[in-house]
Image (cartoon, rainbow, N blue to C red; front, side, top):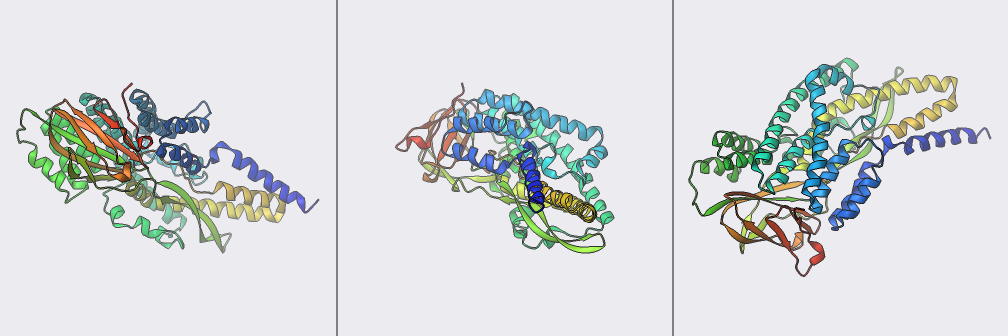
Length: 464
């Protein structure tokens, strides 16, 4: 019995902790949800989402995911409702940051609480992409004024994030120096360092400013006749993604008159799913109670989505047109992790040192309790795997002049070989298509996917 008691206590500790909702496996949950989405079973995906979020207090991720799934179902009104709720959560975060930035950073930077049990506040790129996706929903029904409001909020949000991150990175450096922790992510043996140092990651100015968001802002301002605001949007987009002809041409064409019978059309193609976050354990030498102890610690890694094959062209009325990539959620996610890693390392290491010293003392007086604490810590110390998973990964665009009337857009076979009938009836118009797996979704009244031989591989988003 004496032999079994520690084992039973340890197993009880693991069971209690792993059963707690705070330690949900979000990556696993959303993998199942996204499998249903990629198969075209949007209702099943929504059912899974609701099943995994039964509590009365829904978190930010619930509203993120629900908004995107309802958009895939064709319920743009419901999608906007979910994203409005998400925006209110983000708005409260903004208020807390602006009210007392130092207090917020002190609370967030606490060494005692594991990242995955904190209230999920969203990554910076998610907060910015939220208002961008809201704008696309509004543009799908030609509400340019509403889209302008969402875009203005995007710019204001970027300013709040920029000021906060400058202070946060400085504080992280100070804490690392204070605690004597010199480890950098490049020092982590077995960690996929190359993924954070890839050119497309290092080349980003930051993790939250998107060339697509700013280009879309320029297009909306231009459509509303506010060319003095359109020019800065295009310039910012070109700054974020240099040497991109589409962005440079937008500025050149801004003052050129268009033919009265032609429409200026922006086709937005969003494909794939945002990358997942996983947790890996890396051995790290830590000074615990005056001894150097090799301690396995958990750190987050980015796992790119492979559900959707890439494509770089679409057909418009029989012409093959090149798409221009303006946003990669995978690259933004990796940049966010790259920028966050110094703080993650400091928090994880200090927490491990503190717990290691406490456990050593406990072992000396009560080995049984020490064993339970050690196993509990192992469960607690997994990296945070929460992230907005239904968010599109790649955003590509093509801009062209079309006469009013019906046109046909064709996506390649990797996206189901789908044909989309587009009705052009506005002077400026945005058509948004979404490809996930072999599914193609078209948002709004102006675009309808034409069922073909592979009828189960396409879906049409119609405004209810």
